[in-house]
Structures are given as C-alpha cells and as structure tokens.
Length: 386
Image 1 (cartoon, rainbow, N blue to C red):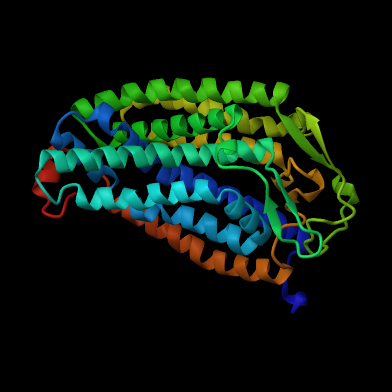
Image 2: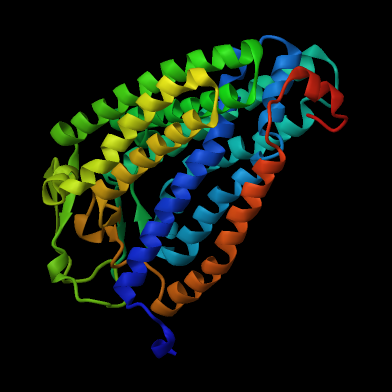
C-alpha cells in the first residue's frame, strides 16, 4: 500500500501544514467578513431597514462561509491529532466561549426579524454584534498564545497531554494585542464588503470605518512585530537532528528545542523571501483603504490579501512549530511529530483533491448568483429576507 503513496511522509506533513494555513486564510477572509459586518451593525446602520440590509448582505452566504472553520477543525482533528488533543483540552473554556458565540450567531440571524417588536430586534442586534466581537477576539488570543508558548506537557508513558495553565492566563498582554488585531482585521473585511454590497449612508459609513480599521490593522501589526522581535520568547529546533519520515512522537529523544528571545524572527534572516508575508499584510491594508472609496470588489481583494499576509507571517515565523510548550520546550508539537500516519494523510489528500474544488466551485456560484447591491428596497421586496 505504501508504494501507491506518491509523497514521502515529511512531504505529506508539509502539504497538510500548508493546507491548514490555506483553510485558516479562507475562513478569516470569508467568515471574517460576516463577523466584521456583525461588529459594524451599531456603527453603520441607524434604522431598522438599514440593519436588515446588513443581515441580508451576509444572509445568503454566512452558512457556507462557516464551512471553512469546520474544515479547518476537521483537518486539525484528522491530520494533527496531537495538536487537536492538546489545544482543544488546554483551551477548553476559551473554546466553549467561542462555541457559545458561534451558536448564538445563527439564532440571532434567524430569529431577529420574526417579530416586529423594537425590543425584540434590539436584543438580537446586540447579541449578533457581541458574537462577532467575542469570536474575533478568541481567535486572535489563541494565535497570540501559540506564539507565547502554552504551558503543557505529555505524560511519558501514555502521551496524555496535561495542560497546566488557566483560562484567565490566556489573556496576557501580547495575546490581547493579537485579539484586538484580529478584531481590526475582520472589521476591515466587513467594512469593505459593506462598501461593495450596499448604498447610501450604510456604504458611506462603512467606507469610513474601513479606513479607521485599516489604520488599526497596520499599527497593531507593526507593534506586534516589534514586540515579537524585542520581548517575546520564541522557540528554535534543530531540524537536522530529526530522523526523516519517522512516526510521530512528541517526546522524540532527537528533538533539540530551546527557547530564545526574538527567535520567531529568525526566518526573516535565513529566508529573506519570507518578508513578502508581512509586507503583504501592510500593503494589502493600505490598498484596501485607498480603494474602498470606489466601492468595488478590488478593495475586498486587497483586504483579503492583507489577511493572508498576516496569517502567513504567523505561519512562517513559527515554522516548524504547531504548538510550542513553555513548560517543557522538548514536548512542543511540530509538523514532524504531531501528524497522523502517512497513509491517513495520503487518503485525506485524495479526498481533499475531490471535494475542495467542489466547495470552491459552489461558493463561487453562490456569490455569482447573489451578486449586486443589497438595499432596503430589495430587502422589503423579498418575502424570505431576514
């Protein structure tokens, strides 16, 4: 059976590391826009008709956009089971907070317009807005904690993961900075989408918010980079000591991992081309701000490229780590010792090669069918509108 697998084990691990990054980018671009629209509700929509416009901008696509998060979670579960076990158990309370937000979001969308009561609609509007903020914050805080290192270890005999941190310990200053950066990124994405899909006061205010959130993305991203370079302890692993194509074992004796100040910046001196990612993160936000006034799709593309640049910066900086351990650096999870079996990765790749293009094609078709502006008139004329 092994003879049918075209790629060696380590190559498959790198392929799935890249695919996980692609799914995270796709989720932040697609569903991040929905979360951004929710957060912008009290700031750009003043009347009930305008609020309904926001609901119906994301109404036809939010369920499909959420598929990217489900896919990313599925990839972590199937391709990186040790990462799934450690992160979902260690971040359990944070994950529950995220799940509450993601569960309340569709309830708010579906039930908001069921009654004409002002109080009823206001309560669901507040709920929808808060779910956007909470989800965006938790995602960013999680990324920040990965870069700081997570206090976990494995029991030597059973490989049972043991997390020795706390819920409130996740909200350290740097992690909170990453959380606010995540909010700013999704606000920018939501604002440029509203600038593209709406008209009148909603579009005008959304474009203004796109500029302010774009500035926030750039400032927070640069501050985060300086903070990482000067004050964040990163991790270094000598990959030359890792046996090629070996079975996953997070407590491999050959692992040589050390914690070093500013280590997350090493990739940029070793591989100067990696600077493309942070440059894209800044340049995309600048171009999104510059082009949002035209109200076209180009600003959305530029904002999406900014998101891709920020996430790629995170991936390049932390390579080859998936989840470093601040408690026992030698127990850190890397792409070389946290993956599923070679055969499992290969079967998953074959399945992905079939279904991922179908998901992309269906998503593209939905966006094409639902193209055009969303206005109060189109919402009121549609009997099944939110």
